[in-house]
Image (spheres, rainbow, N blue to C red):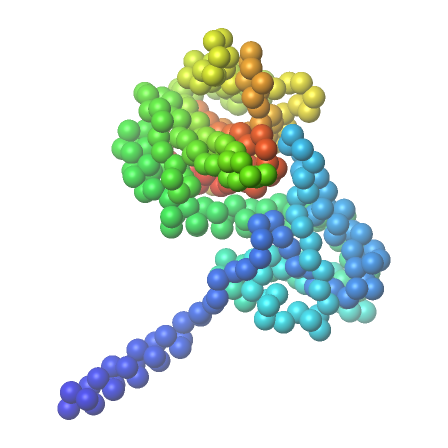
Length: 331
């Protein structure tokens, strides 16, 4: 009787598992996309129009770095090795077809984003890219941000979010080995310090998250110039540099900061990307910030991520702190 019960239990268990949508984990490098189209099409208008948007250079970085790396593969060779890639773009050219763009999540792998672009000709595909190329870049980038947030939730120190929630009525999901360096009444500095080898030497990589807030009065507080002014006053007060009189400030030399209004969880927000520099010193790097109004607590909240990695390219490190700031939640 016990054997029969055990057999019934196993049969029921496997039956339940077989009804679940099991997927493998995604593969591929960060900001890498597999584009499925013929080599002939890739050498023509289709390849040119995709690369125009996806392999353009990122803005506001100290060194030139591409937005994405593209792997072109034809449909015949698009097998299991590539189907689990984190980001896939399928090109479907059919005479008489209706032009459209379709997105599917986790089609062949967990947390995968697949985009299928259908057009009746190469020319129509190129036109579709002209109309929606910026949107496509944004969607694939945000998918990378979502993956990093999920990774941080799994491996990051939960105690950081708990401390922020208890004292500041907000939380962010931080990277593994991050720690709170400063925690005052309305300012928090979270740090992640690492070393990476290059040329036989260990080199410093610093990433930081700054969180600060103040009472909300009117919409003028979200004016970009006002935000920079507040930001510099906060860092001057709270982030002194290594030498006397030095502090972190927004750089206005060379490439100027970019301001972008965005929809953040249904609320208006201002995103700023730019370069920071250490006044009276030689340090610097990129930063990205997000400012929004916390209506629950009637305050303006800014969360910023910065990178200092003088020996390395910065895009991926900046993307990591972007994922942290975009995990912001209020309670």
